[in-house]
Image (cartoon, rainbow, N blue to C red; front, side, top):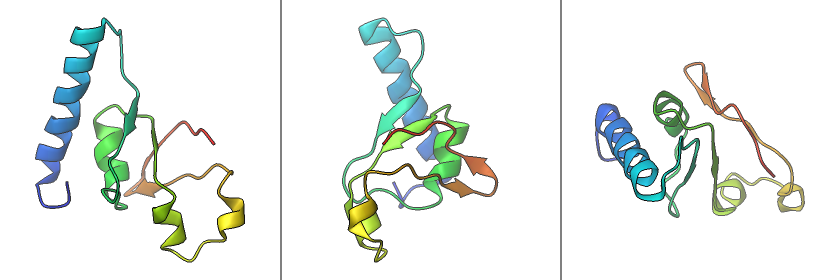
Length: 90
C-alpha cells in the first residue's frame, strides 16, 4: 500500500468494501483487517476517508516502537492530519 498514491489506496479500500457488501449482503462495512507489515501512520487518513472506522493490527507494529508489550491489551488511537480512527476495540 505504501507504494501507491493515496487516491489509489482509497479506491482499493472502497472497491473491496463494495465487493463485500454485494457478496455478503452487508449494508455497510466499517472495519478492515490489514495484512502484516502494511500499517503506516498515513493509513489513518486513507482509512478514514474510505469510511473505515477501525482496524486490527499485528502486535509487531507496537513492539517495533519499543512499546511495553505488557500493555498490548489496551485501546489505542491514531490520526494523520486530523483524520482519526473513530472506534476502538481491544
